[in-house]
Image (cartoon, rainbow, N blue to C red; front, side, top):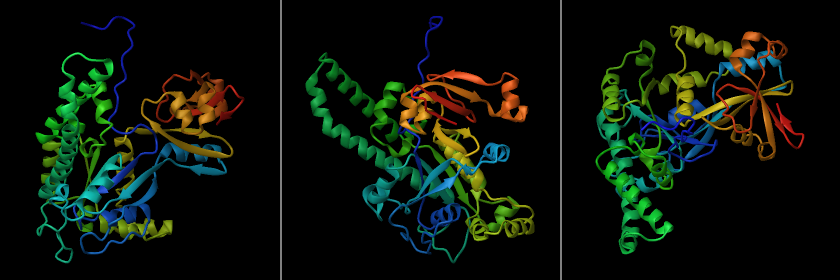
Length: 399
């Protein structure tokens, strides 16, 4: 039956924690280039030695999210400060086969993955006799399957623990019962359903769940519920010639097991050399010598950011031009809370300039003269790239 005319459509909930301060973890087998990737992308100095478990405690850093719109606004307003949006990246030590049962430092590492919101899954796609591989030979598809299986097994174990702890009480309730009892039984049935799905070899994130089921799933912090971006670490030679013998098999495995997930090749060796050059002219010369090659990091960062269902809006003025992070589909009050709770709590309306309209007009004054300034209520949805001015009931505003 079609919905009644004018009936509100329920917003689809998202897997994962709500909020804007989300983190993405770098995951993979030992010695596949995770810490090398992390060092280069964050300009950090995490140890990256040629032996397993070099990284034990997770390291965290923030990377700026590139956006040409912010660059344009900066040139337009010439502010005192230019502040981009950021993505928090965490370097997590390598998993090994049997990690879900405590092999290696498995339980600790799996708990580190549980604390992040998304995954950069790094897989080694280069052969080098001087770099030890924990499984012996370089076989990326096998490595992908190992990590996938360990995360899945850990989810099954966590779900079974919940089921074992609650099953007897649920069975005692019988049929009927109070509203709270019925809710507990429904929640338990959802956990069993999710356990069966994962036990059959599927990731939670690939299931078709109702909003009520997603609410229950989100209380469990399951590893396979997190979005994944696959990063293939290739040699510098392969990266520059855009050809690698392992990539077709990696892509096939992803399409068969996790269709829709992104695969991005990068070279840890290339990115490390590039990151070590601080002078912009020297960087340009380095890239020119390599046929005009470019870093893969901007694409990796924006893809990871997008996988977390994040977007950003802007505030712009003489003091600063700034990108603020919020969840896709956020209302104006939620977006305002990214800036300050007081602004969100007393918000009345929002002046909105669409970036495309501002760029086409050439200036804020010309946009307003053309009647393109949009007034939105506090319950309206903010859209990616909006330039906003929040008007509050306490005389406070943020531009």
